[in-house]
Image 1: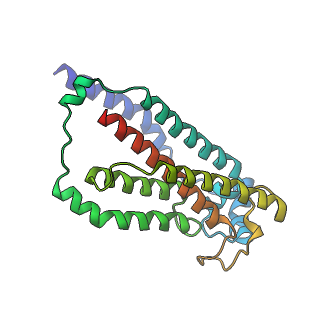
Image 2: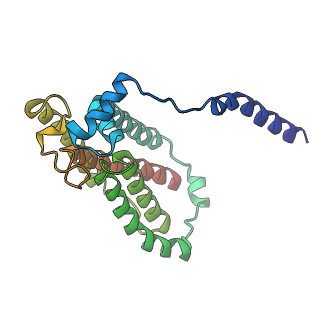
Image 3: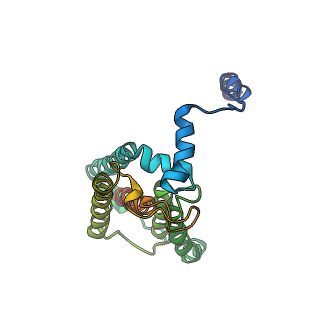
Length: 234
């Protein structure tokens, strides 16, 4: 009874705090000068139909580079931390590997190819529709997790994962430098043709940048999943 009363009290307190935020939501009307410049510049200057993508990849590209770096540091930290915590021999004797259910195995066989294809679709079309490199990479990592759960793979090819991370990270920086050399600044995508607005081959180098981000994010999150799997088997 006391636990229910406390839970109800917490819910009421949260509702009291958040209610003014929701009640105060309204149409802002006119946007500021910076937002207006972004809204006008993304389609006209960059050829990107998705303004959010243009902001994330180009206008604040250095911030996105920092986010990718933070994700790399976090995945490396998780792998390092888990490598120092092994299970005892007694626990290893008690632990038995449970075979995955037929439902998971069958579902993985159907869903994993679709998830991989959908993940690639998300970051390749990030300049046209909602999504991008981070979202597509997460979907790909979720497909890897499903493969582990289904027992389709026992471990990742760490050498391949490292090569993918190195290739994607170096490619991201190289595209940024090309923007300085052939366009107007770091990660400026206009060193490639802008194409026709709304078409797949448009927005200059933005699809290339998002593809590199998607590969890097997918590889790093897959590495985190593999590190947690190894920790669970110890």
